[in-house]
Length: 250
Ligand code: NDP
Ligand code: 8X3
Image (cartoon, rainbow, N blue to C red; front, side, top):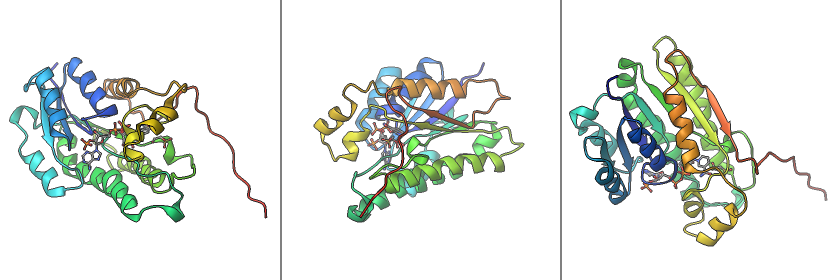
C-alpha cells in the first residue's frame, strides 16, 4: 500500500503527540503542527524528516497556516487524513466572572482555526477520498460549572463534524468526531495557567484516559475499511459518569 499522510494539529503535546507516534510507527507520514517548534523538531529528530514534517505556527494565524500548507515538501503535499486536535480550555470560572479574552482565545482556536484548516484542506481531502477526525469533548454534550465557552466551542466541533458529513455525501470523505472525557495531558495545566498541583489533584486516583488511548481510537477510525464511517465516539474513563441537575432554593 502507498504511504498515507496525516496532518495532526496540536502535535507538540498530549493527544496530538501520542497520535504522531501511533501513525508514524504504523507507517504513515505525518505533518506535525503546533506553536512549540522545539517539541515538533524532537519528533522529526526521533523519526526522521522523511516520516515527520514539522509545521510550527499558531493556528489562529490564517496567513501562517496558508504558508505552512504552501511550504509542504512534495512528499507530504497529498493529505489523506486531517486530525483537528489543537485546542484548549482556559479558566474554570463561572461565566459571570470569566475573562472575555480567554473566551475569545478558545473560540479562535477551537472553532475558527479548526474551520479554517478544514476549509483549506477540503479540496485535497476530496481528491484523495480522505478523512477528517475532529477532537471534540464530552463538554459538548454535558454541562458543568465553568464549562461555558469551552463546552460551547466543542458543541460546535461536534455539530460541524456531522454537518460536514452531510455536505461531503458522495465524495467518499469520512468525518468523525471524538468526544473524550477526563484525560491526563497538559490540558489542565493550560486551563489553570500552569497550576501543576491543581492538575495533579484532578487526575489523582481517577485513572483518567491517557493520550495513548485517544491515539489508538484515532488510529482505529482511520484504518477501518473505506466503506465505514464512525460518526461520533464518546469515551470516558470508568471513574467518570454524568451526574444530575442542580436546584437553587431561596
Ligand atoms: P494539551 O494541552 O496537552 O495539547 C494541546 C495541543 O494544542 C498542544 O499541542 C498545543 O500546542 C496545541 N495548541 C493549542 N493552542 C494552539 C494554537 N493557538 N496554535 C497551535 N496549536 C495550539 O491538551 P490535550 O492533548 O488534552 O488536548 C488536545 C485536544 O483534546 C484539545 O482540542 C482539547 O480541547 C481536547 N480534549 C481534551 C481532553 C482532556 O481532558 N485532556 C478531553 C476532551 C477533549 P502548542 O502549545 O505547542 O501550540
Ligand atoms: C475536556 C473534558 O470534562 O474536562 O474536554 O471538559 S472536560
